[in-house]
Length: 169
Image (cartoon, rainbow, N blue to C red; front, side, top):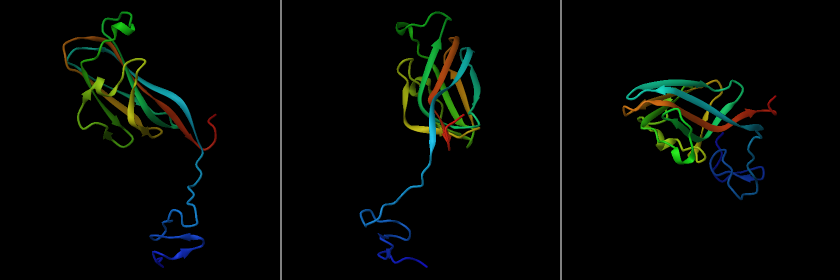
């Protein structure tokens, strides 16, 4: 039977069938969900990224937890030398990230690495966290757009591993 929009149910007033009205004498309670979050980083190392080339790599999300991605950082090594705060190079490359759990690209087209990954010590903070489900795969494709060879490009996915239920073992 459908409820009348102003029918009292117990001590709560219903607006639409099944929707509690705020301040109508009852509080809506959400089901209790217990989960634990542990800081975590998934990293991809693109070694020897040659000029005008494309490379793809995957990283598997742990089977026991989802991964809530909140920050992104890159580290570029052009010549294999020491990297200091004054010698940070910016990659001339694009990146496309695919959530393998749902087979969806996160960007409509590849974007410059520097548009979505911050520098060491100042990571890019995502506008909102993105959750990769347990056992899914993050597929990342990087394309160098100039002739320069890079000794390595490291992309760090910073966030938390989310365990549902009790505390992880």
